[in-house]
Length: 226
Image (cartoon, rainbow, N blue to C red; front, top):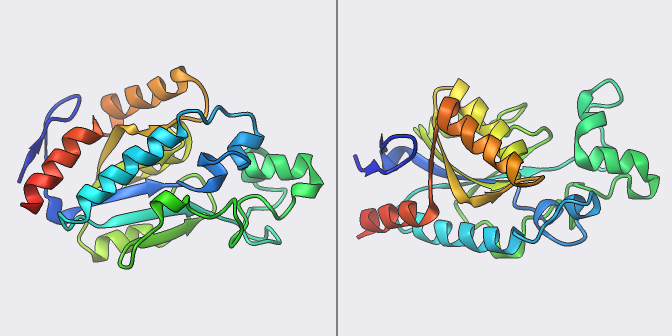
C-alpha cells in the first residue's frame, strides 16, 4: 500500500478500498445567488475550490478510485426537513432563510431546482455514486454507509463545502464508523472566516483523521494509474 505524507503523520492507504467524497458542491453553496450567497457568506474562494476538486477527480478516475457525491436536498413541501420540532428547522441555513423570507419557501435546496443542482464543472459521470441527504452529515438517514461497505471502501478523501459544517460533520461520522478519513486542505472552503477553517483542520489532525494537500494526493493517484 502507498504511504501518503499526511498530517499529523504518514498514513498507509489502500487505493483499491478508497473513495473521494465530494460534499455539497451545489449551486447553493458554491455559486452566486445560491443559499450561502444569500446568507452573506463570502464565496470568493469557491471558483478555486471547484477547480481544485475537478483536478482531483480527473486524477482519481484513471486510478480507479470511486467518486461519491453528497447532495443536500429537500422535497418541495419540506416534509423531510424535520418540521418545527427539529433543530434543523432553526439552524440549517436554507431553512432559516425560507422561514425568514416566505417567498423563498420551497426554492432553496429543493430537489430538482437550480440551488440543489451540483455545479456544472463537477457534474457526475456514469458510475459515480450520488447520495442525497437532508442533514449536515452524509451518513445521517442515508444509505451512504451501506453503499461504501458493499464496495469494500474504508479510506475516504474529503472535499467540498463547507469545511466546518457538512464536510466536518460527515468526516466525524466516518471516523465513528471506523473509516479512515483524510481531509484535502485546499479542496474545501468554510462557511465563515479563516478561524472556522483552522478549527476544523485542528479537529481533524488532532482527533478525527488526517489532512493532505491535493497535489500530493493527485501525484499518488497518477502513480497508481501508470
